[in-house]
Length: 288
Length: 158
Image (cartoon, rainbow over all chains, first blue to last red; front, side):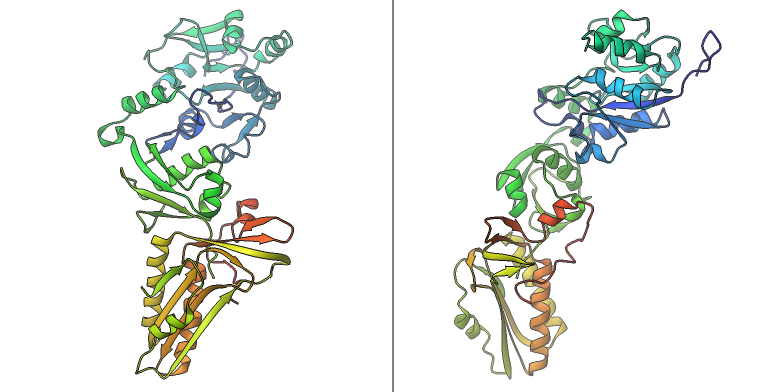
């Protein structure tokens, strides 16, 4: 970490993974989307965690009980409906003396090299250090280092009705750096983009989504609103599948409370799923 | 099938005939009935639901285990699914053996294991109009409580 030109020590950097979006175009929770058996949120947190000491997840009020998010340290938006800029403001308010490596959770192509380059190029004297978008040449606010000194300007920006973090960066003095890999910041907003990302990231047999038949009984049936469904999924294991379907249907039981059966036999949660498998999640039984 | 489901009233007379064995000196059966109360709440009816394909496999395994563990001649278990009223029979277990002791032991073993292991669920409907899946609803309210299905408490058939 470079000291500033004035000699002041730069603030330490924490990670902030943004997972407060409504995923409206994806029509399912983007944070829970699996890539090779790992949720997008877990991937982004792991990536940030390899470069900074502490990582937080930015969530909206009400998302803090969501199981995908709840096992992380979270920072809940201080204002409702404000978008990512509120998440960044809330993080700076919660820890005023640190800078934030802000990462959107839906950047599946973002590499360790790109994060390391961003941190190495960071200029703590400015409001932020950001990559230049390969799409429009503008600063990309959701893969950037935001400095603590942004706090006052962010407050003024919000008071003035500003809600777009990109416009905020364009109006302030920020360091813009060039992407080494032009695809690094391609994000994934739609089911089509997700499918393409899986193809690009996958290899061998992993690239084809499987079709699985899920049957639901008792409480699970009521909460899913159906007794069976066929799902297309990349979930590598039964545990991944439950995480994905729990995010989709809002199941209240945790995985630890369930058993799982694959093809009409009890199974372990770590079992690798195969195309055509029939899966049943078994809530606590009560015969007799 | 030594373990099976009934979608209407269990025919205990017919089931008993299946157990007749010239080498058996004793027969006993256990019936689980729908009770009008549970954990301080007034119950008006029950709905039973099963994952029948796996339930039959697991039920058969329990009956095999019983025959390996206890020197019994034959054993059968029939479980209801569907909507049951008060005093309806939810489950029937029948065992015959050379002497009575092992029949008692095996019968107890079978009903205990069936309650804990077989994927069958029951929804209680209460006098006040509420309903709930037994062993599930309180889990959902306290998600850190993990029981691996081993603490399912005995209810109707105690």
